[in-house]
Image (spheres, rainbow, N blue to C red):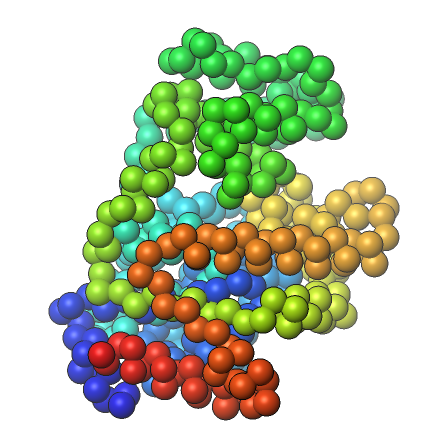
Length: 367
């Protein structure tokens, strides 16, 4: 069966296997087995594992777990680097071509659906120099905040004044009425809800980078970014792709999430975040927005309970898993892999379940 699959996956046809799913569903072990069977190499589509030093909280695959399978986009950037979908797309495309050049199969593994979509459909992120500097202006003001003693309100007011001046749509502006330090992001999110409600279905209000990116897109291009993304999703894939989404019973998935957070805490997540903080990393940096890191960072800043922080990580991770599944359900040409169906409701151990799933994957590719 495996030989038939290898024949099917002729390098000239640009095969691309995607193995994704919600966090903690068991992608890592299955992907290693898949790569070893098909002589493949893995490209990580994870927004946290790409950073050096973010090991425990990202559940980063270890060298031992890799079992000799080459991995790409793991431990590539320092944690003060702003890694985003644009960088991922370019780096992943390079890795895919390199893997083809070696006569091997690229396998995308990870739970960041937007990253996968960007690579698969070669989504364009072209933007003017003005929009490129837009978010950078805001983040520069945030970095100045500590040195100047400005409040977040003052930083936001200065940025919004600049934003309204640059806007090509003079009928749209950020509403600063009744804004204060605690509600600043709520005000931005409220504005986004009014002009682009579809975006707020996938963008959390605390993710100011994405909120402002969506607002800036509307200001400069005169249309919601959700409409742009919808058009991009209609593109045909540049690859001969097989898009597998691993899933499982929700209660059991949540159990696994909770247990994994407990293991992270026992393995030294707090110490890991302390070390990153001591290195000069600040809460507004992209790396520190990752679930597990932002909650511990906040607890360290405020003197909060680490037990409460762990519970918040569990809650945020469960919510994240739900959003991931919502994303994958709207993607086209997805092949779902339900662990419950392959394990007879977990009467089989994990290794036997993975073997059954692999056999199913091989059959799908062959036929």
